[in-house]
Amino acid sequence: MFDIKAWAEYVVEWAAKDPYGFLTTVILALTPLFLASAVLSWKLAKMIEAREKEQKKKQKRQENIAKAKRLKKD
Image (tube, rainbow, N blue to C red):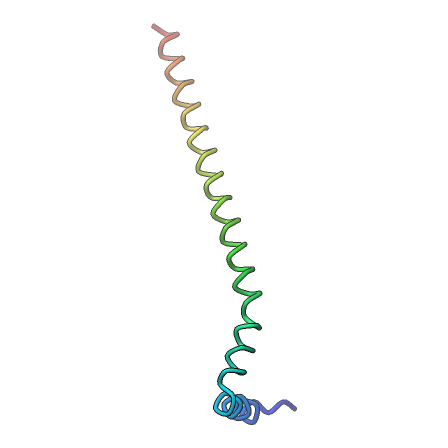
């Protein structure tokens, strides 16, 4: 089976012996994840903005309808 303790010791030893290589590998491994996170965050922000804009538009429409009904009654 997979020995986590031995693997952790290997990683710590590798980081101690070659810190620049270790950091380079970690950064290269994490960069795609950071990029994916940034893209998804941007898309989510755009979706939230669009939803808020649509809600404001609907609210304004409802206010105008209510205003028109009040004027029509008078």
